[in-house]
Structure formats: structure tokens, C-alpha cells
Image (cartoon, rainbow, N blue to C red; front, side, top):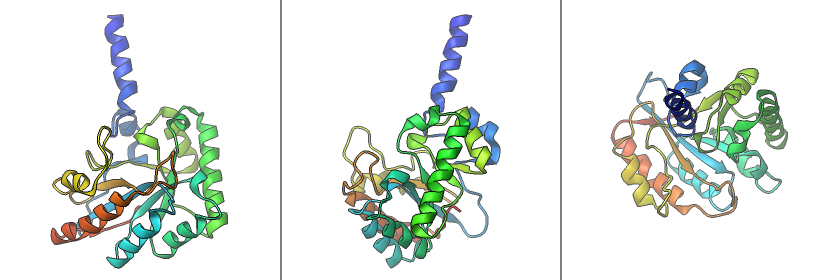
Length: 234
């Protein structure tokens, strides 16, 4: 009996390391967002993690501007420097949403007070460097969640923003390519879906991510042909 109970507890804990909603998300209610409401015209939400990256993000912004598409950028605080702050200023100026992203899973082990202070300090710093304040939205590294993380979000009135099932560009055992990204995303995307791709790398902030730019350029017209519009998460 105790073994079964222990297995059940382990399953519940590990489930919150998976990139999909589970028990804590259900308990968090509207504070955990894995799909946007289907209101108004059918809309999809392109989101990008781990930037700003001077080797990729400007090209990505060029592509989005060319197609008049707004997106949401989940940026890592330590990747914002005097060199990259102008990229974030451009995000705001061109109508994109900017939100917070953690660089590691360790943040999920912090107390709610410590994490709330960290996120608030990151938002303050972004505002001081760019003149604009990021959205009250947070995406944990790898989608890992914890009770203390949700408590921290409640302290500062933030929401967790996840993504749709299989609507990501990560390939754990193969190189990321635009072709592979599109093969996964295109058949699955529908109204209200949140898509996540990466314009940066948490451990290599200047590593080029050309597959993300190419996938975005090719994805936008395919989705528009299906009657989908593009929105930002604010």
C-alpha cells in the first residue's frame, strides 16, 4: 500500500515537469494558461523563448515586421545587457509583448517570496533599460512548475504561460530544423493555441537559431491561408 502511495506521489510530482497542464495547473485556475480563449476571430499566439539573442532576434523581428505579425517574447533577464537592450526596446516599439522567462529549473525550488522578488526585480530592470514594463506573464524553463512557483505568481499577480501539446520546436535527440518544426506544428495548430519556438539558448545566448527565423517565415502564410490571425499575450 505504501509503495503504491509513494509511486502515486512521485508521478504527481514528476508530471509537473512535463510540458502540459496537470494538477497544480488545475488548482491555479486562471493563473495557469496553456490555451488562450477562443473569442473573436480565430487567433494563434507565436511565442519565443530564451532571447534576446543578437545573432537571431533582429532577423526574427524583421520577419515578423515584414508580415505585420505580433508575437510574445519570453526573455531571460541575464541576457539583457547594454548590447541587447536595444533589441528589447525594438520589441516594445513594434508592438510585441515582452514577458519573463527563467534560465534554469532551479527557480522552481525557491521559496515563493524569493521567486516573487526575483521576477519583480527582473521586470524593474527591464523597465529601467527599455522604458517599458514587461507583461505580467512568466514561463518557467522547460515548463517545470511547483506549488511555490504558483504562490510566487499569486504574490505579484502574474500568470504562467505554457503552450499547446506538441506545439514546440524542441527536438531532444535531433538537430532542430525548419522542416521538422513545420511538420510538427502545421497539422496541430488551431484557434487559441500557443506556439513556442526559441530565438535564443539559455546556455549560449549568442548562438544563432536560423531555423526559428525560417520556420516563422514559412509558418505565417500557411496559418493565414487557414484563416488564422496572430495575437500577443499581455
